[in-house]
Image (cartoon, rainbow, N blue to C red):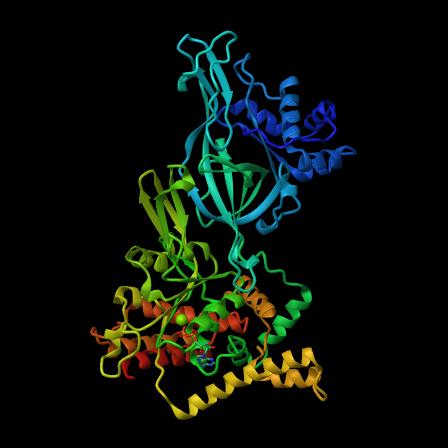
Length: 623
Ligand code: ADP
Ligand code: MG
C-alpha cells in the first residue's frame, strides 16, 4: 500500500476493542472464508452501511474512515492480526489482507474534487477511459552495497526513490544495487475515469482523474465500464525538468471498484413525471410533438427529425436462440452540403438523450471512434488501452460529426462496432473486447465538399457500401436554392434572433407592453413542445418499460414492403437492399410503437416506417 504524504492531525483513539467487537458480531462468514482460501482470496470487503449501523460506535467508526482512512485500515489489520481472526493453514504466517470498503453513501463528482479531500476516503463515479496492462510495481526495494550490507527503502506510487547511500553505520558506500529477489512487488494497474455523459450539461468537456489500482483488483474492468471507485485521494508533487513545483497532481489510491451496469438508472422519474409521460403518450399528436421538440430552431428537415425521434427511442435488442445477438439500436447517417445545420442537429440530440456524446470523426483524442492500444507516458511504458467515442457512448447515442474524415483504423473497426456492437483489440499484452452498444448518429459531407448535380449521388458518398449498409437510415440533404423554403428558413432564423434580442433588451430596460406572456407567445415557434428534461425522462421511461411485439397486420405490411424493395433492388445502387434492411425495418417499427408506449406494433407503425424509408431511398436514387 502506498503511504500517505499528508500529515494527519486527528486525535488518535485506540479502536482495537471496537473493531474486535465489530468482527465478532459481523463478518464471521467472510473471515472464515478468508482463512480457508488465503492467499487466493486476500481481500476483506466491508460494507460501509454495516459499519455505520453498528451500535453506538458505528457512526464514529464510519466518520473516522472517511476522515482518516489510513489509520482505520491500519487499525483493522492490527485487530485481525492481534486476535487471529484469519487463521491460515501455515501457523506462523501473518496473512497480508487488503481491507476494502464498498457501498459508500455519498459520491463526489470528479470536477468537485478539491485539496480538502486529500488524504480522505472518497467515492467517485465515472466511465473508464484508459486502462494499462497489469504489471508488477515494487513496494519494498532491497539494495546491496559493494561491502555486502543491505538497505531497505519503501516505495510508493510515482517515481522510484533510491537511498542516498548505504544505511549501515560506518559504511560510506554510495553505489547501491537493487536486488529484485529480496524486494517486494504488488500487481498494479493505472486507470483513468472520466465523468459520464449524463452528468454533463450543454456539451461540457468531461474531466478525468487517474487511479492507482493494486493487487487482486487489477485487471477486472475494461474501458467503457461504468464504475464507482472508492479510495483515498493522494497528491504527488509535480516535477518538471528536475525542478520541484509547488503544484501537486492528484490521484486516487483505489481501495475498491464497484461496477455499475444499469441503464438509465441515473434518470429519476417521479410519479408525477410518470403521469405526465403516460398522458403525453396518449396524445394523438405525439409524433409531431416529439419531432418538433428536436432542435426547434432548425426549420424544415421534418423527415430527419422523425427519424431521430425513432432513433432516440430505439428498437429492442434480441438474444437469438443460437447465442448471437441482434442489435436494437438504430443507426442514422446524414450526408449533406455544408451549412444545412447537420452539426447543430447533432449537438441538440446530445441534450435529448439520457446518455449521449458528441464527437468529430477528425477527433483530437488518439482513441478516435472505436479504441486504440498505445504505449505512452500515461502507462509509464506499459501498453494502454483507451476507449473511443462509441465505447464511451455505450447504452446511449454517439453523435459523430464529420464522419467522412475519420481515419482508416476507425473505418475498419466501425464495421464490428456498429453491427456486433463490440470492439475487439489484440495488440501486444492487451486483448480485450469492449462493448459499444450505442446508436450512431453520423453526419458527413459529400466527397467533393458539395453535391454535384451532374454526378450520381452514389459516387459522391465517401464511404464503402459495407459501411453504408450498416445504417438503418441514410438521408441525403442537398442545399439547392428553392425560393419558398429559403424564405421560410430566413424568416425562422431571424425570428429566433429577434426574439433573443427582444429578451435581452427587455432584461436591460423593461419595454412597456412586454411581459412573460408576450415573450412566450413570440418564442412559440422556436420553443420545444416537450422540454429537454422531460424528453429525456420520456425516452428513459419508454426504454425501461416498453417492449412491443409485432401484430399480424403490421408483420404482413412490413414483409410485403421488404419484398417490394428486393424486387426493385439493383446491385449497382450505392445502398443495396439486403436482409439487414428487414432488420432495420423491424427496429424502426418497434421504436414507433415505443413512442406511444404501446405493447403492440400495429399497421400505422408499419406505415410510418415505410414512409420514412421511402423518403431516404428516393433521395439516394434520384435528386
Ligand atoms: P453543417 O454542419 O451542415 O455544415 P451547421 O450545423 O454548422 O451546418 O449550420 C450552419 C448554420 O446555419 C447554423 O447556425 C444553423 O443554425 C443555420 N441553419 C442552417 N439551416 C438551417 C435551418 N433549416 N433552420 C435554421 N437554421 C439553419
Ligand atoms: Mg458541420
